[in-house]
Length: 316
Image 1 (cartoon, rainbow, N blue to C red):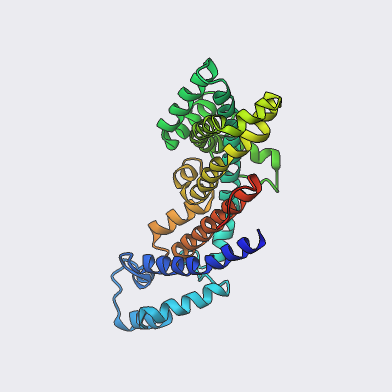
Image 2 (cartoon, rainbow, N blue to C red; image 1 turned 45 degrees about the vertical axis):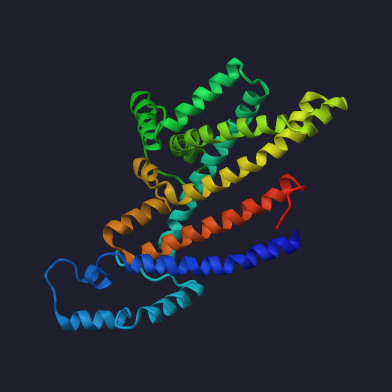
C-alpha cells in the first residue's frame, strides 16, 4: 500500500506539469490581454505607456520565458496580483475556497446520507413500493436541472414560507447555527441531484453484488441476512459509489458557479466567473490552476480509498 501510494504521488508530477501548461495556454488564448484591461476603453493608446506596461508584465518576452517565470513564481506560492482589487490573488482565492469546500462537502455528504440507505433498501426489496418510489424520485432528481430546483427552493422555502434566507453566507467558525440557515437551501439544491445519481448507482451495484457466488456462500453458511447485506455486499458495492462521489465532489468544487450566483454564495466558482467578466487574468489563471490541483488530489484520494474498502482490489 505504501509503495503504491508513493508511486501514485510520483505520477502526479507530470500530470500537474501538463495542468500548468494547459492553464497558462488557456489564459494566453483569451481575447485581449492584461494591457488592454489596464488601459481600459478610454481611448488611451499612448505607445510609451503600452510599452512600459508590456515591459512591467513581461509581455515583451517570448511565451516560453513568461511561462517559466510564471511557473517559478507559482511554485513559490506567488500567484500574482488581481488587476481589479490590486490584492494578492492568493488572498482572493483563500477567501472563496473555504465557502466552496464547505458547500460542496456538505452537499455531497447530504446526498450520501440519503442515497446509500435508499439505494440499498431499493435493491434488497427489489420490485417493491420502496424500490419504485426510489427509482421515480431518482429519475426526477436527474431530470430537474440544479438551477431550476434551486429557484424552486428559494420561491417555496424563502419567499412563500419565509423559513430560510434566500441568499448570504456566514462562516461556520463565526456562528455555526447561523451558518446552517444560509447553507440548507444551496446544500439541498446540490444534494438532491447528486443523491439521485448515487441512489441509482448504489441500487445497481447492490443488485450486481447480490447475484454473486460469495453472497450465496455466506447465506448457506447460516449468516444473518443483515450481516450478509451490510458487512459483505454493501462494502463491495460502495466502491463505484465512492468513485462517483469523489468525482462529483471534484466537479462541484469548480462547477457551482450558477448555484453560488443564485444564493449569493461567496465561493471560488463565483470569483472565477466574475474574474472572467472583468478580464482579471491573474485571478482566472490561479483559480483554474487551484481547482485543477484539487481535482487531481481528490482523484488520488479516491484511488487510495479502494484499498480501504476492499483489500482484494489489486493496486497496479
